[in-house]
Image (cartoon, rainbow, N blue to C red):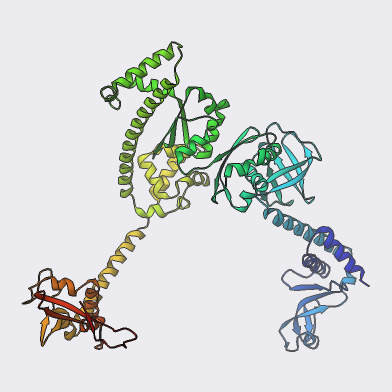
Amino acid sequence: MRSEFEVAFNEIAELRSLPRDIVLEALSTALVSAYKRDAGVGSSQRVEATIDPVTGRARILVEKEVVESVMDSRTEVTLEKARYYDPEANLGDTVMVQVEGTTKKFGRIAAQTAKQVILQKIREAERTALYEEFSAKEGEVMTGVVQSVNQNMVTVMLNNKAEAILPRAQQIPGERYKPHDKVRVYLLEVKRSSRGPQIIVSRSHRNMLRRLLEYEVPEIYNGQVEIKSIAREAGYRSKVAVAALQEGVDPVGACVGMRGIRIQNIVKELHEEKIDVIEWNPNQEIFISKALSPARVSGVYLEDDPDTGRTAVVIVPDDQLSLAIGREGQNARLAAKLTGWRIDIKSVAEAVQEALDNLDSPLLADLQTTQPEMIAEVRRIMDKRANNRAVMPEEFTLLGKFADLVQRRIMAQREAARQKRLAEIDAVRQTLPQAAFQMPVDVLDVSDEIKEALQPLGNVGEIMLRFLIDERRLRNLLHEAPSGALEELRDALDRLVVPEFIEEKAGDKAAEAGAQEETQAALEAEQPAEASEALEAPEVAFGDEVLPLPDKRVKETAPVAGVEPLIDDLIFDEEDDVDVIETKVSKGGKKSKKKERLQRRQIIYDEDLGEMVVKRRRKGSRKGGSAWDEWEE
């Protein structure tokens, strides 16, 4: 039969959802605190407590000094008793001695101290367990029950364990919450606090839409379809760019589902929020035109300026302008967030009118001589449109072609200016110490707000570069920092000492290369004379005579008497050159592959051809044995 202690112990562990070892540790700590409070032991004396989880028996061990006669039983013990616990104990040693019957003699204050310690340890263990449980689920979608609602936030109970806060800024606009309603929330952040983990959840975060798509679309969960980017304005509209990672899978169709059943489930969960699913394309022009859907786009022109950033000029038909911009600019704003480009939308008529007004500019002046008929026709169509007369579809097509022609000329000129600007920036970059581009922003002696604002630049070298070429961008980055941030940053850069470790590495490499050259020269000087002579004057047997072979390392060599110069090409190849070098560096008189090949070649005078030819001896077939008795030209 189980003891009362074991029953109570298991009840606490199950009720608090804590591991048994944590509860045992709390009880042990409580006994130690109670003993110190009851016996008046100082904190410097070592005290340990162990509890048997089955019988509930507690043992308290106290560190005591071994002495001949005990003056204070709380800190001293006799040698005889000490050797009962440690047979090798001697006078002057310290041993852990068990205190008998201590728990039964605890007074009211000691018992109250033990109770408080137990409760405190259990509460701390509960908070730690809750923090670890929910911090591991950070970034996931969970289902909770609304506990209370006020003007600033909604309290949600998660898993009947912890309360989470849904701030007003993380709520979907227009959505109403009532107590006991079940809601799905995105676990945004988990913080430690003195009262337990502080859990913040959200329903307006864009990653909640990502998680809902993963739950509803198996292709996304399995990795067949990837979500490239999400732009969301909670409660109104969202755009999602998806791409297929497996051939034959339609990413948009997989997300929408049959008859739109998958996307409709997400729309209902997000309070009837409109969701546009767009297929991602590596071509940024095509991707931007799709991001502006449902509007049709006539042309997209990209400009990546090093100072102002990436800008896309989009030209749309006149009847698609309001649709491309959207209500209060929502469609264009979401497309810009989705693609990462700043989008400037123009109608065809607006782009054509701007071009006609700037025909006298140096950029478009030559159009009046190269395209006079097109310009005249465009003027006629624009006058016709200004008088509210009907414009035919083919006339709109001509306006689109003219706008495209002008816009491409403008982009070509801006690209040339961009290349020139990049060359200037590169020239300025070369004047700065290269080591600065490897130093993080954290090395600067500035406030944390300034460091955080400068993180997009990445390193100290980029900050120095911006001071020289574009101080305006630094001011934009520091607009939320305290006043005087730019002057503080300039002073920090003036005080900064940039190490020259890159230059030192380059010097070390040069010294190492010089040492290698000296070593190579020393090795060449130590080669045997025979090897050098064999390299300088290679020979080959020709009948009864021995003829020197030409050295291919020398560009011009004297021809051998009676031998055509083409023999050089017949005898030598690239592999032969390598073998000659190997002959030079080899030691010990080992036979090289070069000599083996030369033994299988012979120069013979062919009477039929009337010239010298090279014949090579080849090995016979397996049936005929391994004799080297067959020759071929």
